[in-house]
Picture 1 (cartoon, helix red, strand yellow):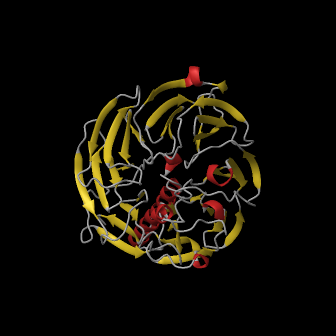
Picture 2 (cartoon, helix red, strand yellow):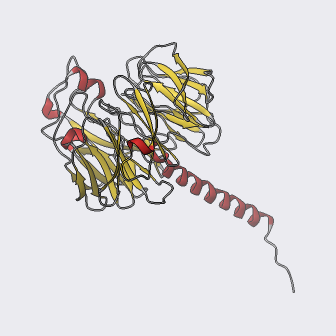
Picture 3 (spheres, one colour):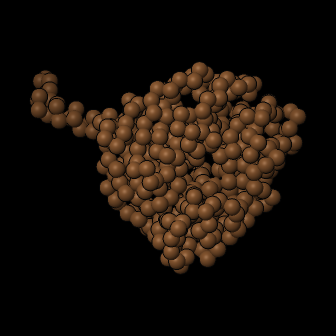
Length: 430
């Protein structure tokens, strides 16, 4: 019997083909991991990014730059796309806002590899959208970050509703979640879990709403959600039963994600809440308030768990930005322009250090390739060691000085995606 071995050329072709398939599979898997605000379950932590850049500028390690509609939403990765939202026609310049009737809202997709435009879905706003006051114009009409289940994209526009579209930009459904408005405008981002899309509609209708992801119909709705711009999250505690957790003024609540039934309640922060919840196993780190507080609570309880499941509470945190957990520590890029770190076990403060630029911060901290990346509004990105001793590794600047960087960065393989009010930037070493 003869043994047939592949020829050299065929063998090389097979190896190349297999490698290409592996790269495609890993790229798609990585994209699925950054498909919502701050990536995997909102942690802000990226795994398997490969080597990420430490230094960059407008001239160094800038892979590509693409002009974009104004907005503050963060970019997400969906297969071969980068997706974000924006607006145009009104409120782009405070000194000359234009005509309110000209406002348009957009879901925008560009190519992951080179930033080239792929498609734009344009929507008419609700008549209830606010006038372009200084507060509203500072954030705009496209602040919530979209999410994806890898098959569709779900984007929220506050009083203009939640929209679902295909990966080719075709509108599938659009649902109103209420028409209430307040202060700085909308900010809560949607998340998708199984067949439901969840959205905090505290501002629009004082509610937490679950939408059927296929039809957009309201699956359930619970009221009494007060003063919150935060994004809900999913946790699976030690009892193995998933919970949907929402943090708003005064209360942290765990819900049955399928029915909206309240499972447990814990006393929270006595002020409005903006930061997202950080989940570490079955522990929830909840922060916010103008006086800055952080509460650690265990999920999985039933009834009022304030006395039984609250681990600690401290008067340290942030008003706007979401913390990040790494190796037993909670790190913040504080909205008042400083880095801070707490011991996650007891809430004790390890450091609080101001950034040199002293600019304000809206973007939340993210971690990739073992380093912390803190994006400031003026285009400076501070790269820091993920350690309980404050160490700055680099300070990098992008932009033309006439744009704001409000969005939290996203990680791609070997690249970082940053979004300003004028453009999307990709920095990397390749």
